[in-house]
Image (cartoon, rainbow, N blue to C red; front, side):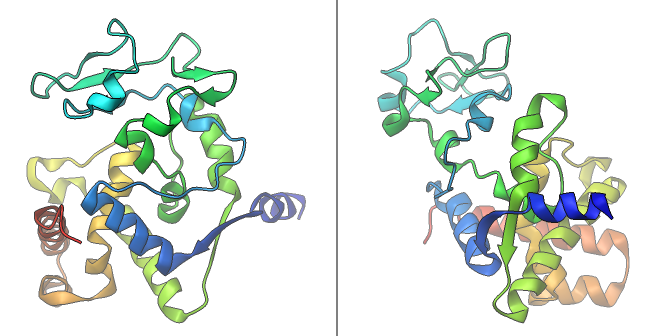
Length: 229
């Protein structure tokens, strides 16, 4: 009983109406737009050993960071760099618990929204993400309509399927990184709402591999629409 009370008490941060949040989150992914998160005094993402990707066209960001701090991003074209962290996992741009380049922060930071982990139903990571995980446990979505609950269940179902059926996907694997898994779940959630031809085909086939194919198709379609409003 005590444990149930503690869990209930932790969920004291309004995360917004789920469907509204989902539309905004998907749009941010599609357009590289920012998100509006009620961070308050939380600096979890700034102190959790994240490598921050900075693209070569983000000159406004790069001009405010000492040239010897970023490192080349492995596997990406020349000009793409990563902003690392110190031995305590803290971003070098965090000064006196505040981002020293907040108005000019990288798009990676602008898009970060820890509510995605609450939406998907997974932790942000291990011990190095403990601060974020505490925050995630406090987020509480609201459900003004049945559609809100249906969409939340669909997002969680997408994440569960992707995580538990890696062998059905190309290459026999899916992302182990929580952030990447969460993003895929947001892109492919429509498959688990039974919407669209791909979803209907997967449901009719009743095979895990058919559902995986529908997930891949949904993600490709989502990515193909990047940059469109």
